[in-house]
Image (tube, rainbow, N blue to C red; front, top):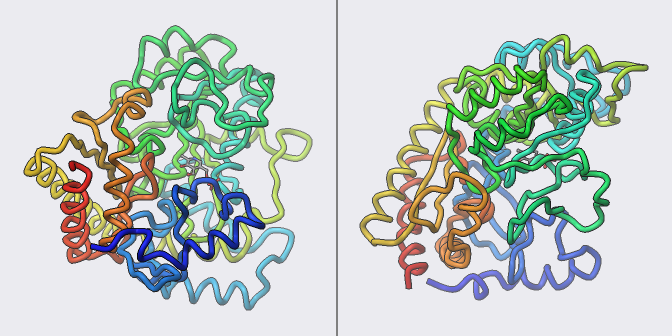
Amino acid sequence: MKSYTSITVGSLNLFNENKKVMPFGVSSNYRYFEPYPLYIRKGKGSHVWDIDGNEYVDYNLGFGVMEVGYGNQKIVREVEKAIQEGSILGFEYYKTGELAREISRRYKMDMVRFSSTGTEATMHSIRIARAFTGRKKIIKFEGHYHGSHDQLLVNVNPPVPKGKTMSSLGIPEEVVTNTLVLDWNDLEQLEKSVDEDVAAIIMEPVAMNMGLVPTDEEFLRETMRIAREKGALVIFDETKTGGKAYSGAKGEFSLEPDLMILGKAITGGFPLSVIAGKREVMETIGPGKTAHGGTYNANPVSVSSSLVTLKEILTEDAFYHMRRLNRMLTKGYEEIGEDLGVDVSVASWGTSGTVFFSKEVPENYKEFISSDISRWFTYFFACLSGGVIPMGGFNEEWTLSISHSEEDVRKHLEVAEFALRKAKE
Ligand code: PLP
């Protein structure tokens, strides 16, 4: 099999041109990897093509957005209509309420406001929690990612975790004074840390930014109990998980967070995010009360795409299909790992999963970061050479779409077997 660098010469050339005008040649740091990133030309169904014409079965899916499959014709029709009719119309679009009602029904949340990205939605959610409780502190967990705004960009991906660590240059310490960082799945630590000044505990209810780290449901339930006792709100950041099961982690675990964030897959591919919450909490939003705004919020294109996605595409049947394939992929990885005798572990949930280069699936960030990441990269490049994008990065997960087939999964497993052999060498 040819190497990554020999089949992606066009990507290398484009990288060399782009980096003259774009830092690292990309628009989001997460799209960059060494030695140079891949530049993609187009996608169809479950496949994408790079600018060198290489075809890949794609399990990154725009970092978990494109469960609807690339070029889904139902979405193309709705979006085309919305553009023909004006793209952005100012004031409120007439269909937005219908989308809010659909989300309220599906996720069992009283009220909904829309933003354009997960980052904006989590940023607003902590402001709402502070406004509602009149408290300052926010608890987050190490390895959980809530977008690229300052207050939660702490201990997201520290190479060597030690105390509170900013995950970016340019964030003054004062900005994160009221952000407390705890270890995921450590109940004792949580119990000690929640006091009467904690406004909210924000979390990914299934962690998916240190790979997919499964949730100890007992930890989740106890976290909710402690928060209730101390009068703190619980925010489920379901930017990823909300679209990886029919009604997200909230539905799967039958839990009642005070606020819930949605984005990515539920949009069908256009910028839209959701802050959903209990009525009394959401009613703190409004003119002269808690600020929430945005020119592109609930724009007609995104609303039209999300409506058809939720009502007609990501149905219960669609989840049945995606989850069945996810089980097949997970089982395949487990079998290959065992047959080859490599130290890999596999975790999966909903429509997603991760392969870790460690004997056991990690339970928190410190365990995750001590897995063998250099071997993960050997595996990743071998997968790319074999025509499979296995996941979006070493700290990401794979995602199945409605367009993936059993044949796609078989191809993934065939290439993964070769890649895991390489990683073992
Ligand atoms: N929250 C979670 C859990 C995410 O995974 C992400 C993005 O990956 C975000 C928030 C930020 O979303 P966006 O990239 O749309 O700003």
